[in-house]
Amino acid sequence: HDRALYEKGLRAFVSFIQSYTKHMCKAIFLLKELDIAGLVESFALLKVPTMPELKDKSINVGVISTVVDVDKIPFADKTREKARLKRLESGPKVDKDNKPFHRT
Image (cartoon, rainbow, N blue to C red; front, side, top):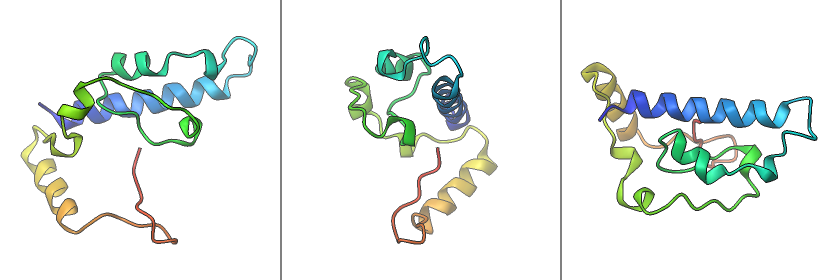
């Protein structure tokens, strides 16, 4: 298990969705026609990332997302894992309205 690989898939998924929604040919690239759950699975993600493009979507990604706690996936690199654990101990980051800030 390596969190770095999971995070690369996460960034690739976010980039794909953002480029899909910003494409100039809106007649062909319709987000409402896209199988988001299938994409989430194809990028090997365990949950749908929080992002503005998907805020009005209800997406069910299956049973594996309820079994695996994404926050417990460790980095294979011991230095990165130590830094991640230290960040977790310090508590969640909050924005100016005191709402949790999630990195996507």
